[in-house]
Image 1 (cartoon, rainbow, N blue to C red):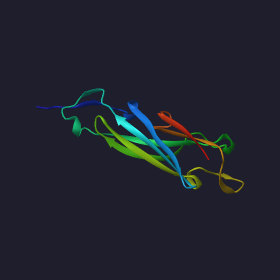
Image 2: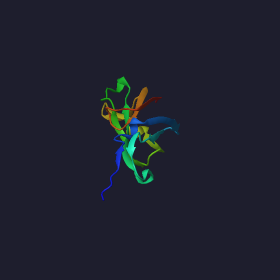
Image 3: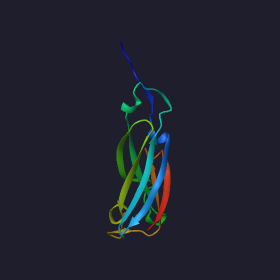
Image 4: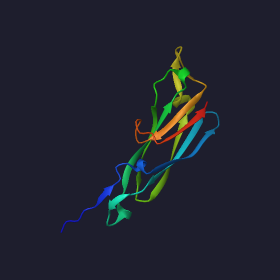
Length: 134
């Protein structure tokens, strides 16, 4: 006898993502935390506690206009595994002097201004947005 499980969870992000925290530590680091939830909405799962799904949480940065940089630059990603009705906090750490720098006048520099932080499963599917001032 053959039994199967059909789980509809093509995207964990389609359920819920919330911004947990954005903070500056010292002068050079920015930390961004989000909580990712997995809710199985249309499922036939004999043992849901064993049914894990993977998602890649991605962080994209929008630079200030004065930087003349392309939008939504990938600056971090994490692969997570979640069971049904489980959540997980994902934290990214950005080093300003590394992740927010631009090449200008033959040297690296960090532009002052508002930076957009975008989190989602892809650059075309952003689920959470926030801004920081540097």
